[in-house]
Image (tube, rainbow, N blue to C red; front, side):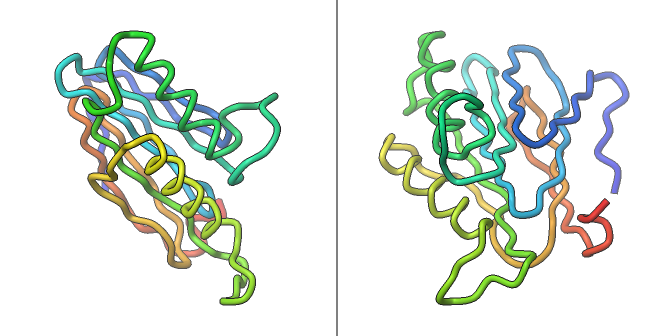
Length: 160
């Protein structure tokens, strides 16, 4: 699968990072238990994506944690006059790749749960999601359209 667009700038998003875009860009990231939340405003063509590792934690490294990533992304949109109701939100990742059980959910499940809780608390509906399971995902986020292309990875691809 190739989702490269030769005329658009490309950004590779690493764990604990985010990208806020006002110009067309293709953002690529690979997820295992981490989650990515994308936000897109169709009117201004402004977009954001995060790659968060853990459900919650100290605020010293905002984009490392799901809860603070979502809040910070919303603040960035609101500082530009874009209200949460204008945003199209998508949620990806949260695989439980390391033997989670029903009595003890893995980091991936907890990441997804926290993301859904924070998004709901902020009045945001998830327009699309591909979460859970035991396989990693590779995302291609087109910041000028809000489109996300997704490839599910084999175990060996997700580990690399």
